[in-house]
Image (cartoon, rainbow, N blue to C red; front, side):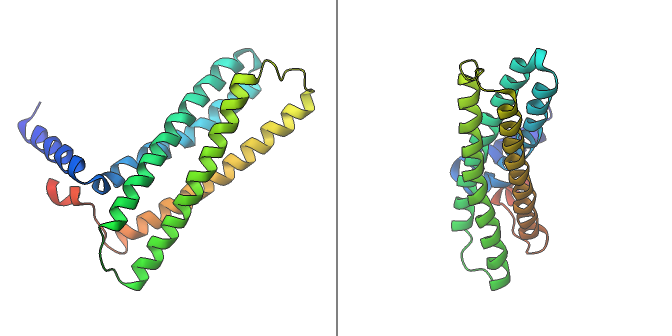
Length: 177
């Protein structure tokens, strides 16, 4: 491996250990990717009942990891916001919108994770319920999940504005240059 690359990785790791907030831009991309892929596995489980258990287990794993990384990114974002100091009112308004969206995401994905975890552990004992119930429940789950993904897009938009319009940068950016 190239020694320049190792030096960059070492600087990033040291900076991240000293300042959790600096890791926010790196951490935030994990839950975005994981949480957008998850509903595909839920849908595949619904349309391919023979493989439902496998697809839904995969969805559960992705959802749990996505929610945990969302919580980590949220905490890192809180640390990053605390380290900003004085910012102009326009940047502050964008930051508040970004934070408001992140708060909603945290709550929504905790609820979705709990619901899908309960379903996954108790689906065999709940099989007694009629098929229309499961269709309605699945549609409601996916509708709430879709709404939550729209919130992800909106929150990411405000995060992008903070970087590209308002010029906020992670301290990692300074260490890698």
